[in-house]
Structures are given as structure tokens and as C-alpha cells.
Image 1: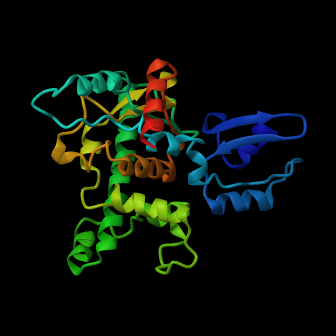
Image 2: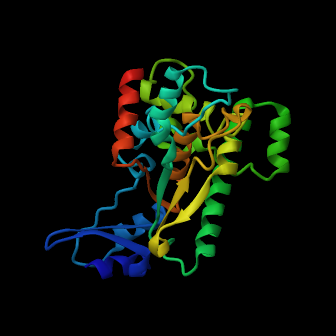
Length: 287
């Protein structure tokens, strides 16, 4: 049944992901259009009964990931430069946070079926660069359309961005509430994501420092990759707002990755060792 279903969508087994298979049910993931899925459902001649379910963007973000990146322990380290340590108490505080500043804050991204499995690292990097380029274009659109001036309209035309949607226009939670300017019909979840975009990658700064300093670590088999968000020791103070130390930048990046068709899943890493216990303790002390 599995092979027959993939053939109905004109996909090879490598272009699909088998989730589960039993005597009574088979579940798989593949990339297709809504029009194609509808046609296959209508005209499928196999013995199986097919059910197509869209994989929503928010379903691609692993459970607990948003809570992780918003926590004080996970957030990318940012320490303003000072002339020196003033006393033993401050020196002790610096030592206490040293462990949580040493591990890499990474976002783990899995490719959609049919995208990953490249032969060379350079091929993976090219796909990731294209994804990042798409995200930054959509983020710029969000900022320009929110600004709404005639100058911005002309800029959109000049840069050939007119047919590109903003991330907030296609992210499932915010998309249906864009035209709702009243408080009625909105809830805290919608407001959280709307604020995240406005203060994150759809802001004027566009999280430029975050994008310029992140780097990619391919994973084995080239079916996924890590985005490392805290290279070196954090941003210069003047670039804090546009850096990964701004949790709105990281959170809106997760949403942007989830809407991209090349992305199957997104999650944040966290270390299972003593340093993480310190991070959790810091969280509890600050709350």
C-alpha cells in the first residue's frame, strides 16, 4: 500500500517519509500541493481509504521548544563589557553563569522528504542559504507592508517583492487575524506571535545581527542541520536588539522556518548535564 500511495502522488520512496505501518493503517509524509492532494483523493483506485491531512506550520515546531528559547537559561548569552569585576559577589555570579554560557544554542532543523540526503555539504549549504534568503525576504515584506508608506510600495516594486507573502501573513496563528484590529476575536496566543514578529524578524532591524552571525552544522546523512545562534561571545551592545540575544528574533525565526516548505520540523537543543541544572536554577531565581 505504501508504494502504491507514493506512486499515486508521483513520488519515489525517497521523496516521502514513512511514519508508521501496520496491518490496518499506514502513515506517511510527503510534499505536494492542495490541488494535487485533492485529485489523488478523488481518483485513487487502490484498495486503501486515503485521508490527507495538512502539516500545519505550528505542528512542525517541537513541543516545548518555544518555552525553551524563552527561558532565561536558554537565551543566548549577552554580557555588556565592563572595566572590571567590582567585588567578590559579582565575580561569584560570573562564575555561576559560566557553564551556561559555554554550550551552543542551536536550532535543529529537519528537511522535508525529498529535500535532504544531499551528496555534498556544499549542496546542503546552498539549500540552507536559499531558505535563509526566503525568510529574510518575507520578513522584509512584513516590515514594509506594516509601514504602509508610498515609499515602501515603490521599494517593493523595485525589489520585485510584490508577490512574496510576509511571514505573519502565512503563519497559521497570525494569518487569520491580520485584518482584525479590534481586541475582540484576539487572544493572548495571537498577540504573543504578533508581537514576536513586530519585535523580531519583521521589525526595522530585521534581526540582522542574528542572521549575519549564525552558522550551519550539517548532520549525518544531510537530512537535517543545526543553526548555531551564539558564535563567539554574543553581540556588541549596540547590536543587542537585532541579535539572537533578543528572544523575539529567535522565536520569530522558529516560526519562519516552520512555514518554509523545505522544512519538516524545528526544535531547540538543550544540554543534559550540570550546566543545565544551573540554568534552571537561574530561571527559578529570576521568576
